[in-house]
Image (cartoon, rainbow, N blue to C red; front, side):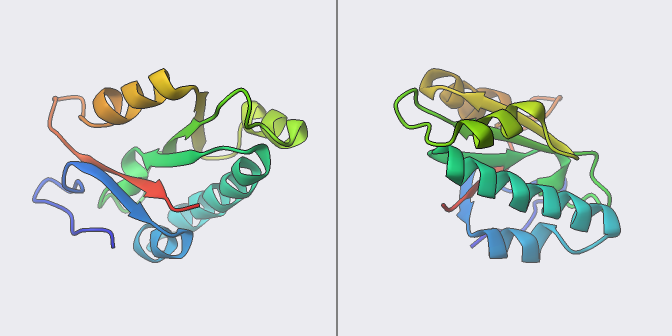
Length: 133
């Protein structure tokens, strides 16, 4: 379950796991922009699964209470021995509408989740959402 926003419009600090359906219900319906972003998130998740991605974490204004977010920041954990579909991996590298996607190895993934995504520009701790695969 995705927790409520705090008084500044962020999720509580930490990684909150959710299904794609829960993510859509919470973040992907409030505006036309959010619906379009959600379509890209679904597309990205499908490609990521095909490519053998192990974890997906969503961040950015998409996982806040902003009515029309700028984009969806995504970090995808890949391992050299787990990539299954080179065409899906190429599509992820080429990019998708509304998404900022980083395909990273474990060390970089930990940096994104524990440092970069964990705080806003003012160093306020905030939460993010992990897609349950």
